[in-house]
Length: 268
Image (cartoon, rainbow, N blue to C red; front, side):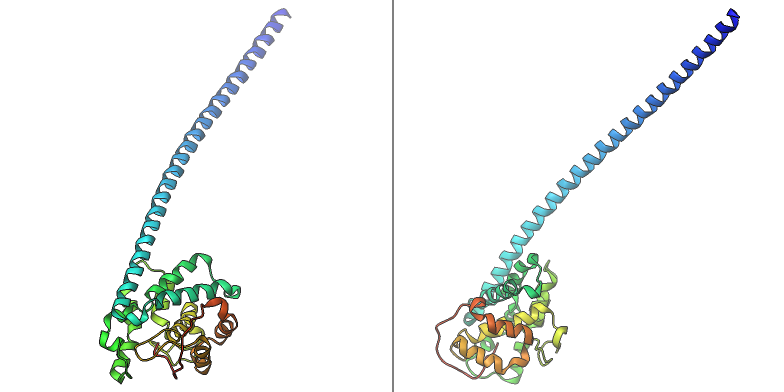
């Protein structure tokens, strides 16, 4: 009997030892798994740090490029003004009007991050006139048909000039389509209604208004009230909803200029 008990105890001890050994193996496996997970986490943290560093570098590059583009836009605008002194300040005024327009009209739902692009587009919207003769740009008398064709081509010239640069589509649309009329009678493509990009429809109003209220070789600047009267008579050019908002909000969108005289139309 005693011998049987001894055997039983030995078996129980052996069982305990096997259980302990299995637990130790399980613990060792868990420790190896934890170690592997820690190595994986460390690798992921290194990867995240590397990605963050690359993102920071790319952000810095974007900022630097943006600053260069802004300076280039301003320089090109100044070059244009030197060739056509009557448009001095015109690009900035168009930009201010357009920026105020989208800022004051929440129904447009215009993305805030795009607003700086509006001003950049304004600086460049007439850049195609660089390719047009100064004699034509500054001609004080009526343009011939051939000269009108040259003037109208400035939208294509401007777009072709900047399309290879890192500009937002908004800028290209503003340059190419800011002379499209809502009724389809504009240029360069004769787009109609909502076929015309929103930014170009806004620029059509801003550009037309500032052209009327600025001095040109063929006429002095007009009073805002006179300019509005002319624009209402030529309302086929404008998106009716946008133009209605412009008329209602003009005191907030634009600065009034103290200028005399009235003439029948604008060469904008």
